[in-house]
Length: 402
Image (cartoon, rainbow, N blue to C red; front, side):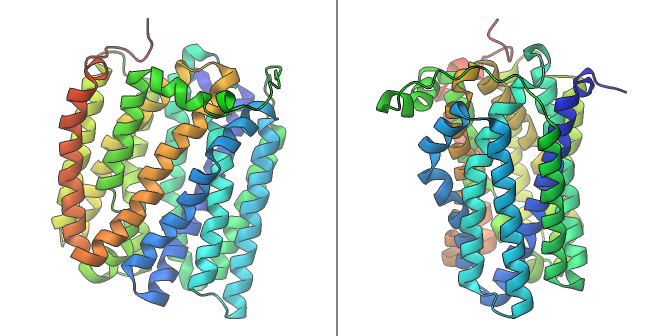
């Protein structure tokens, strides 16, 4: 069935750009992680890849929020895509030249982190200007569906074509960045006049203050932070693929894609049937089930069961993603969306990239399986604690305040 959100041309361009960009990023990361582990055989170095991407997001948080609120968001995204394309070309040259090593991979990861630091808040701030706010939850769900589709296809394609050479994968990533640039170029949106207020400590920290004052938003994004920080196993998938499940790069690609399969199905459902009641309790239940699915994956030595567990983890996580993004965007005025989205990107980056570092360090001390077991159990405990700390979020009925 058709969806009214797709009737807006600029949203369609944004949607296609997001698919191409996400697919490129996912292909890059699955091959970079595989090459890093192939070179160093170190769980710690896999964690360092995640940390190298997160540090720029943290360091540039206050700057990117100001940039996204003051300048044309299309141009910011174009510059980010040029940077990602350049990184892919660098990796092609390093692979063909035989000088790809640990330091080059970490340098490329830092570059990707810088691009994502500007890209993520800008995308989040741009999307609400492309559709009426009345259909924003559906637009967020559809956008997430496209992103998850790319997350499914990207790693799978990257893992399979890796047999032809890593340079082929990186070349495909560069081509997708060019396509995404074209889509952003075609996009049009009504840009609110910038007040260009002087940069001050108050304006720099406005996003943090905004989130702190709205406890339900704070509870939602911090829940996602700690749940994925402790429960995520993405960084350790190369170890599970090779040492636990005894599969190759194709298997790693499927494992990396599995959470997105579940997330895609849920996001498609939510695009058609948005959550309208008991959103708080539904979100907490979903995050608890995410932790349980993580436990099943950690204890599985059967490839099929591991895929299914990862698929369910992605499905339950998507519920939290849609609720969190809807709360943030619906309650934030456009003049502040860049700064608020920049702070939100810190939580997302911490839960993903910093979570990969945490997983790598913990696995270095305890082993991969005990590390993920503790993470899954920790996620369930976090849910119980957050329900007590944020009762208004627990009993929130609707996504909208009304």
